Image (cartoon, rainbow, N blue to C red):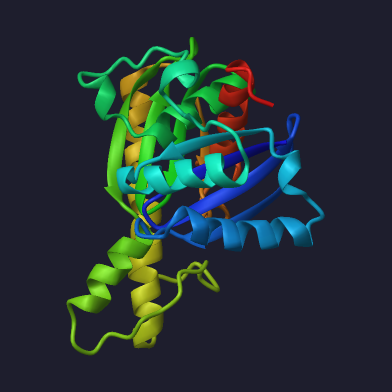
Length: 259
């Protein structure tokens, strides 16, 4: 089996692939100081619950936007699974797509992985929205080349800034509003309307501008945990694909010869 690891700024997702099929996945808060031994204690227990033995892991691939997490994941791979980890964008797992931007090396691994997976799954020009700590909006052309994109604060980051810099506003959960009203009758509703509908307006505006600049039909694919929350109240998404990054990692690993 292949162990795919997507390291984000907020969470790390571990997924087990049996061939092309994702068997299971687990999520843990990102902590660059967490050791390889600590990862192993947590992960191996979860594998045992799912009936997966350590010996079944025959490969590991990592996509990371947190450089300080690298060494400890290497320890996890080598010490506990006896495999040499692949890192997306490097060596055998080098990008097999054109990164057509001014500074290709600055592109986050997760965004390149998303581009590879989306091009393999969906035809034509694509606009990819990834809801993470930051929200990224990327253009991948019909040939699979990454052409550039947008980085905006993630919705939880925006909410944190609002709460942490005001004296009396409470912390609320991000969820789809109960109705389409934009006139809140209490503080919590007013905050949710401002953050949620403000974010929808931003997405719709940016996607409209990006489509106009592309000048050709482009399908919009959303990924990340909050994609389904916004899908309920906007028609801009052509597809919601929550596991796009993990699927892209599996594709890259299989191309590199990992199983």
